[in-house]
Amino acid sequence: MELMVVIAIILVLATMVISGVGWYKRKAAVGRTQVMMASIERALEEYSSDSGVYPAGDGEEGSTADLYKVLYGDPDGDGKSNSGETVYLSLLDPNLTGSKLTVEKVGTDYIIMDAWFEPFRYLRGNPAAQMNPDFDLWSLGVDGKGHPNGDAKSKQDDLTNWK
Ligand SMILES: [Ca+2]
Ligand SMILES: [Ca+2]
Image (cartoon, rainbow, N blue to C red; front, side):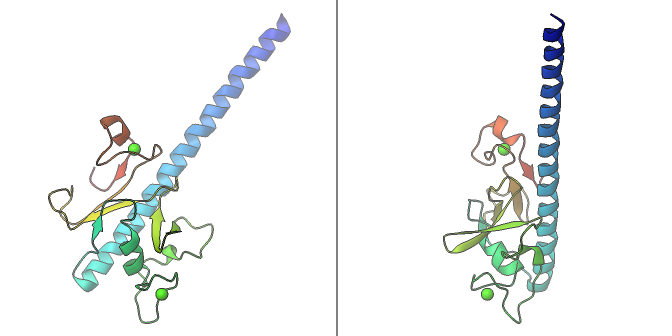
């Protein structure tokens, strides 16, 4: 009987530790994604103050392809910044490993991923759909679903630049 109680206590403690670790990991991923978004936003502001425009984006999975090109100075998309181009965000180097930012080659494009390895979404050039006048940047969060087509619940964990 006593052994059963000890086992039960151990199981309860193990469950607490596991859910605590899960909570901590999730919190860390959220923080990492927020830091990435802040870096991208800052680089976009610098790019726009130099060039007078923001790159276009349709808010779909591949919508950070042009962000990568202009912010990393790689218009030909070969994974290396071109000489003479300004690098606004050197963390976008696709060859960097262990970086805070992850850039993945999808088809012929490099796209920017959040901490859950889901593509960031970027919308610019569609004022009717945009939440911000300049640009929308968001992560779908841990569930990989959300703005604009997901249901209300899927949007709750989204990380966005408009709220
Ligand atoms: Ca290049
Ligand atoms: Ca979500």
